Structures are given as C-alpha cells and as structure tokens.
Length: 106
Ligand code: HEC
Image (cartoon, rainbow, N blue to C red; front, side, top):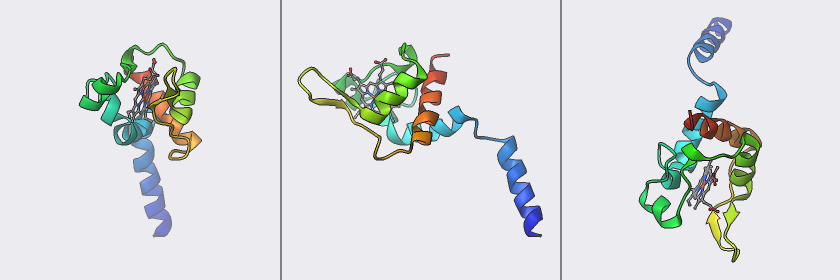
C-alpha cells in the first residue's frame, strides 16, 4: 500500500509541475514580487520608489542574476537598493528563481 501511494504521488509530481522555472515562480512571488511585480516589470509602489528594474528586459545571464539575488545591490554610496537573499534562500532556490526570471523575457 505504501509503495502504491508513493508511486502515485511520484507520478503526479512528475506529470504536473516543477520544471525549474516553475519552482522558481512560487519563490519569486514570495520574495521578489513586492518590488519587481508579479510580471517582473517593477510597476509596484515600492518598486517604483526604489527604481526596481524591469526584469523582462534584463540583459543579465542566469549566473549574473543569481549573483545579484545572493548579494543584493548597492548604489554608489553603498546604500542597499536590492536586499541580499543569500541567507534566506538556498543556492538551489536562487538558481530556480534565476531560471524563472530568464523565462520572463520570452
Ligand atoms: C526591496 C525591493 C526588492 C526586492 C524584494 C527584490 N529586488 Fe531585485 N532589484 C531591486 C532594485 C531597486 C533593483 C535595481 C538595483 C540597482 O539598480 O542597483 C533590482 C535589480 C534586480 C536585478 C538586476 C536587473 C537588471 O537588469 O539590472 C535582478 C536580476 C533582480 N533585481 C532580481 C530580483 C529577484 C530574483 C528578487 C527575489 C529573490 C528580487 N530582485 C527582490 C529591488 C528589489
């Protein structure tokens, strides 16, 4: 019985979700959308105030996006613009989000 349940849940999991970008979508909505918007365009109240970038037009590679998520960004005076996520998200989660961000541009 246990094995049957396990097999079924694996099958359901395998069928429906969880390409890397789709896993990143949930994480993006939780961690990033407040500034960058659900569509990544940055048209939220806080996004406009901070001048959050329109991620659908970002020219960055996935690796560069991962770096920015992990380390955040600061302006020339060292004031934080985008917070760092390295302590809140695992490298796998950061990589999933970067895959989702890359998928926004297409
Ligand atoms: C508190 C608001 C805020 C949150 C939350 C936030 N960002 Fe940002 N993000 C910014 C701002 C502001 C910039 C512009 C930074 C700059 O110009 O230095 C930015 C820039 C970026 C860039 C660079 C885009 C480019 O082409 O220049 C990427 C990629 C990015 N954010 C992804 C994310 C992801 C992914 C998350 C969630 C893990 C996230 N951000 C969460 C505010 C935020």
